[in-house]
Length: 136
Image 1 (cartoon, rainbow, N blue to C red):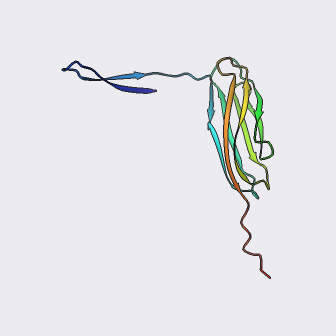
Image 2 (cartoon, rainbow, N blue to C red):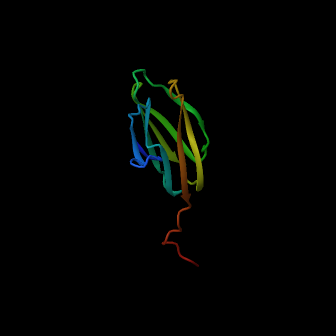
Image 3 (cartoon, rainbow, N blue to C red):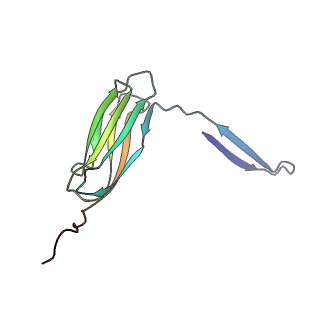
C-alpha cells in the first residue's frame, strides 16, 4: 500500500512538502471476491463462489454464524485444502424473485479475524413471458 500527502508550511523556501508512506499489510485470511452480486431471472439457478484462503501457519476452521437471506439463497461451505482453503458456494433459490441485500457471516478460530462477512446483493426478476404464447 502506498499513500502520500502534501504538507503546507509557513517555511517560504519549502512551503509545500510531500510525505509518502509505504506499507505491506499482512492479512490472516484472504477473501476473493469480497462481495457477491446476483442478477438474472427466477427461472434460472445462479451460482457464485467465494474463495477463502488462510495466510497463517495455524490451520483455519470456519463455520456459519448467521445468514439473513434464507429462502432467497442457499450456501454450502467446502474445504478445498484442509485448514488452508475453503470454497463458499452461494446459489439462488428457483422461482423466487425480488431485490435483496444481506450477508453471510462466518465464524473463524483466528483471534486476529474471528468473523468474516460476505455481503450479498441481488436483483432477480420474474422471467419474461415466452414469445411462443398465443393470445385468444
